[in-house]
Length: 46
Image (cartoon, rainbow, N blue to C red; front, side, top):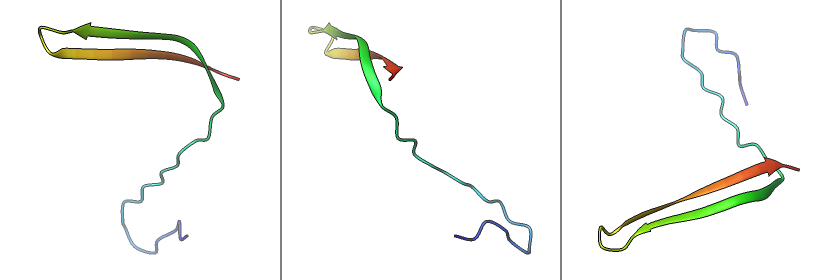
């Protein structure tokens, strides 16, 4: 992988971290008649 360019160019570096997490709280929000819903997940690193 080449990180240095000899000419002007925008360089983006992306990474995907590998985390070990524990579920602290989970909630589900539903509105059956409005046909909408959502969820919330709270985590902490182990």
